[in-house]
Image (cartoon, rainbow, N blue to C red; front, side, top):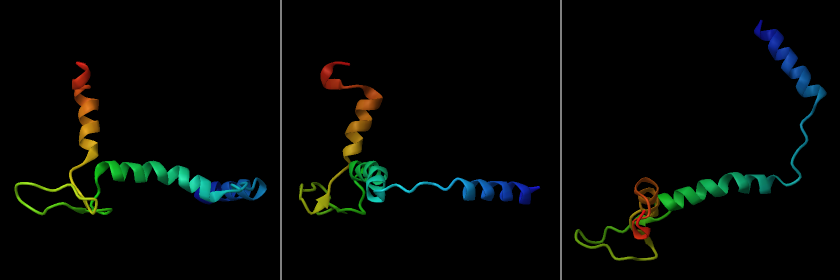
Length: 86
């Protein structure tokens, strides 16, 4: 029965308490750093507004996001490094 499984699980949790990480901020950083780097590489408009100042050209400004750096990375993964002749 489900109640037996729950009781067994709770008994194991009580008899073998989990030791806490002495530095939870270090483990949080190790989890969130790759996610934040991926969002920045994607060019998320949650971090910077898009550069839509003109229909023909978009100036490169530090205050807005132009394009996605991930496009270059994805192209290299899917098509190889064209500059290297691969």
